[in-house]
Each structure stands twice: as structure tokens, then as C-alpha cells.
Length: 502
Image (cartoon, rainbow, N blue to C red; front, side, top):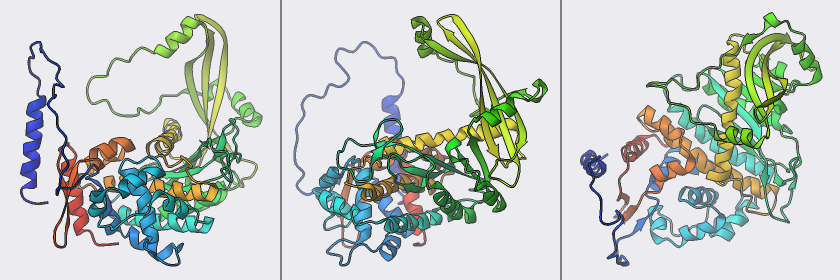
């Protein structure tokens, strides 16, 4: 970072703080947005872009060696006229990072001379060429691409402080990705009546990174063919983690695999279906076996607890006289249990929810429901087991970001494999967000970026107005605005500059 950068950032911060400082306003005669004498002009020489933070992301990609990984191992083009495989992959990812939502938005990047200058590119593939590239993939090629991304990911993990993955949580789930297309090859009718696909997502809960994405027909079961991908994720994380815990809902109990995972040192906390046999076991337990469940707090309250807002939905349900299920209390216990497909016994944690079914203010009847979690984590307290099991639900946020933030599951091309390839390349944008956050020098700030939604991250780091200046041998991205994340952007860029190329 240049010597004058801290001064520039400090002055910009001071100016905006003075501007936004609380003051005793008097009544204003005019609206605050009063600019009326506006004019538009075209800059003749100066060039700028609206994604001034993309230069840092491109530096990140280069310094980690992702370009070389892709071009060395992914062989889809016989002749590079003029693009390499890495050009196509990064073209799709950068389109999303620059604010694009669909393939057609690539044309806006392609027609932007300053965008091309900033990346040192003569040209980039147009939307049609980008779509054609996705159709070159077969299943082995998609796996090769994911392996290239994962080898690059490991270089990010190697830069992390000691104890970074003291306990790695691998989450696995499927999600329906619908499509309105009539001719999408490989799609199917899902259990909920939606036509489309059923991608499998394996993610690392610690960093929210997507380790593996697998596209499948919409009519497959959520757990179908998931064991092989779970094993790949375990093999990827194992050299970097002191302990691995696999988490999944009842579809992913995989009782035929538990003995093998246990012998390999993999821990698991998996949901188990409430089938009649285990429900009968729970009902046969004595009252003394149960203890009230005191859930682990989601976070520590550092100041005074806030007043809880009114539960508006529940009030409406009561007023309208709709059937309402109210939680009265929760109890927890555990037993030793051996699934029929296992040679060993494991710990079965049982949560009993005592419910009251009401209509309006009138109670109709009481109900009891059981939830079962199968685990080999004998050392944890029962509330901790339940907390970890419920923590897997955070993967729904990752899936939601892939669907609606990154738009990786738009299924914009024509068949299962090409949409799978697009999905992986689009999800790279999400992973680049995580990698940038992990390499921010100030750890707490990086973790704050890591928890951000994708669109919030773009506004903070990428979608910044920036001037592109080309000198003899350099391309300068000159940031023209200010926000509180610029210090971290420059500090991370400086770290990347001195990082040994992967």
C-alpha cells in the first residue's frame, strides 16, 4: 500500500463522518435530494468501470494459480483461437461478480472497453460462445474442473492461522432447482411437482465454501449417489482438519456407510427417520430418562437483551381461527442404538417436542413428536449435539445464495451436463468471495465479510467506481469512491502481491 493511501482513506472517512454526523436540524424548505441542474457528458480519454474491486479478485485468481490449474488439466479446446479454458471459466465467474445475472449480461462486459482494459484482455467470449463452452463438458470434465478449483482452495487454507480447521463441519443436502424450459435435457418432475433438476451440494460450514456441486434429474431422491461425493469432500478436507464432522438430514443417514466412516476417524451427526421402531423405543423410555432441553445460545449478548418483537403471524393465525401448533416444551435423552446395516452401536439422541394443537384460543389436543440424531460424538453434551445438528440448517442459506444471490441454479443452457458445468463455474464466484475474505489480513474483518450475503459483498468490495489507467507495463485500477471496506481491500491486495504464486 502506498504511503499516502492511509491519509487519503482517513480524509475520506473524516469527510463522510462530518457529513453524516448527528445535528439538530430545523425544518427544511426543500427536499434533501435537490440536485436539478444536471448535465451529462462523455469522457473523451478517461475510462472507468463500475466494478473497481474486480482487479483484486483477478489478482487473487492469478496469485493462487487457478488459471494455470485450469489450463493444465482441463482440455476441452483443441486449438485456442483465441480463448483458453481459463478464459471461459473466469468469463462466467467475473460476469456474476460484476453484477451480471444471466448469460446475456456478458455482452455488457464485452462491449465495455474499460472492463477489457482493466483485465488486460483484447476481447472476451460473447454469451453464445460462453453457452457453447458449457456444452463441451462431460461428467469427467466437470469433475476435473472442480478438482482444479479445490486444489486452488487448499492454497487458501494453507495461508490460514493454526487451528483454522480444528473441527471441520461438512454439510450435505439436495435442493430442487426448477426451470420453466420445455426442452431442458435430463430434467425431471420433482416430488413437489416442480419440473427441473435436483442439485447435490456439499459445503464446508466453517467458511460456507461449496466443495462439490452435482447436478441430477429433478425426480431423484435427495441422497442418491451422494456417498461418493461425500467421500471426495472428506478426502479434500482431511489433510487440513484435526477432526471432521459430517452433518445431514434424515435423507443422508447412510447407515450402510457409518462403520466405514467411523473406522476412518470421521465423526457424524445425521438425522434418522422417525420410523415406528425407533419411535417405539422412545416411547418405552421412563420419565426419569428425559431431561429438559436447554438449547445452546446462538450468540453471546454483549449488551442488554433486546425486547422481542410481537409475533405478528401467530397473532393473525389466532385471530382467524386457523389451526396453530404451539411448542410447550422440549425434552432430550440418548440411548445406544445399532442400525440394522451397522456392525457397531452408536449414540442415538432423541428430542421430544411437547406440542399443543390449538384453534384460536381453544386447545384441540396435545401432541408429541420425536426427532432422532445418530452420532458417534460420545464426548459432547446432549444440547451440544442438538445444536450442531440444527446448525446444519445454515446450509440452507448457502443454497439460497447459490440460487438467488449468485444465480448459479438458473439452468440457462440446454441439458443436465451443460447446466451442471455452468453451475460449477457460477459457484466459483461464491467461492472467490470466501477466498478473498479468508485472506483479509485483519481476521475479524475477514470473518465479517465471510458472513455477508453475496450481494452485500459485491457492494462492499467489487461494485466500486474505479478508473482504469494503462501505463507502460502496468494496469492501474484507481478507486474513485469510499466505503469502510477500502482499507481491507488495499491491505488484501498488498498481501496478494507478495504471495508466492501457486
